[in-house]
Every structure is written in C-alpha cells, then in structure tokens.
Image (cartoon, rainbow, N blue to C red; front, side, top):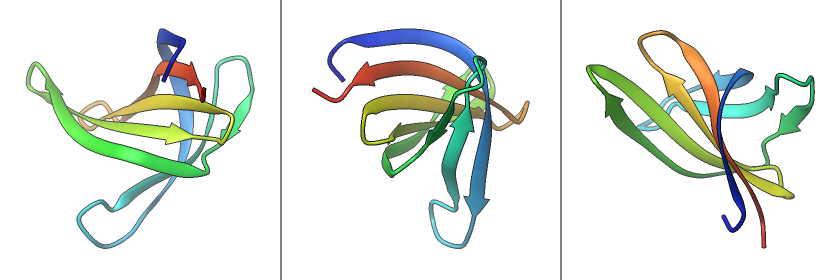
Length: 87
C-alpha cells in the first residue's frame, strides 16, 4: 500500500465459512458512509493479539484499493484499519 490511511472504522462484513485451515472468507463489507466494497482477492491473513484477545487480520482488495480489515474474535466485531491505493 502506498498512500495509506490509518483508520478505526467499524464495518459490517459478509463472510463465508468453510473447511480447512483458513475457514473464514470475507466477501464484502459496508463502510459507515454506506459504501459497499466487494472483495475480489484476499492477500495475507494472520492472527495477532491485543491484550488477551485474538484479532484476525485480513489484507484484501476490491481491485481499485487495498484494505486491512480485522475481526475481533472475542467481541465478534469487524473494523477497517487501513485503506491504501493500488499503485
């Protein structure tokens, strides 16, 4: 990501769950301004911790911009934490 914006925006996510080692696949998310982002590709996915909570981090794209979205597995909430251009 080149020109990154660091955010802490609560988002609504549509995700599918399946078998395997990485069963959660976010498909699209809705931002606070109502804009819907359709995810075309998932890059890296990794768990991290914040205190005692596990946070699942997903680097995704819609083909026009890159995003980092995070799932708090304890609170079951999603946040958009970064947005950047694709250059």
